[in-house]
Image 1 (cartoon, helix red, strand yellow):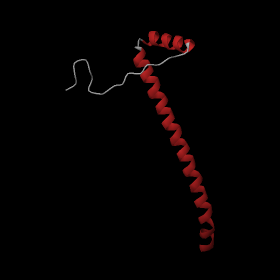
Image 2: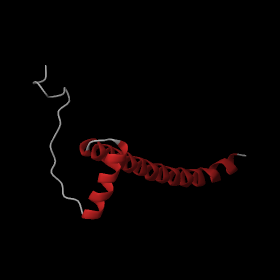
Image 3: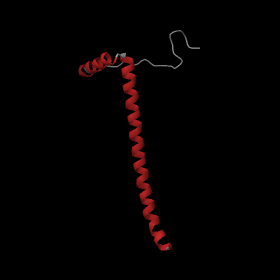
Image 4: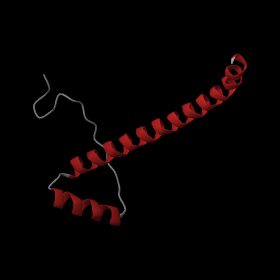
Length: 83
């Protein structure tokens, strides 16, 4: 059972510095969306990591597609010979 005031999921504390314009924009969103700074930053990081993962997957699929086109070209000649 977690200690009082602690959730079952372990968290880590991070201290960060933001340029003033970025902080001001974050502050406006926090107040507008009625979020804590922690929740806003947590969502932003999760979204960034998700986008990063998706971009890597897209690149992987592009590489696979290129490899498949190469294999298709190699076997296209074999198919033509067998007809």
